[in-house]
Length: 106
Image (tube, rainbow, N blue to C red; front, side):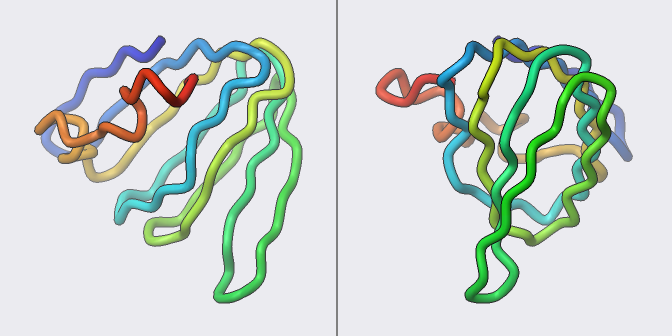
């Protein structure tokens, strides 16, 4: 489940994600700051041709710079609070099918 609201300069979103869910590989120009409120997730990201990963747990904050390909694997049921700057125009326009495809559990 995702809820979000935006102004002219920023967007905030809350997510509730079930264990086993995957936010598929994607990238966006927006800087993203994620606060893990509950649960545990594995963040994967690419730096050139190298792939890296790390786990974040309740209380951790993750900063994902714009333009970095990344995905998230949900290890335990999780709740997050995310901030994007500038707002995600793809979400506003409804072009965020990677999050809404029923064949991909998010």
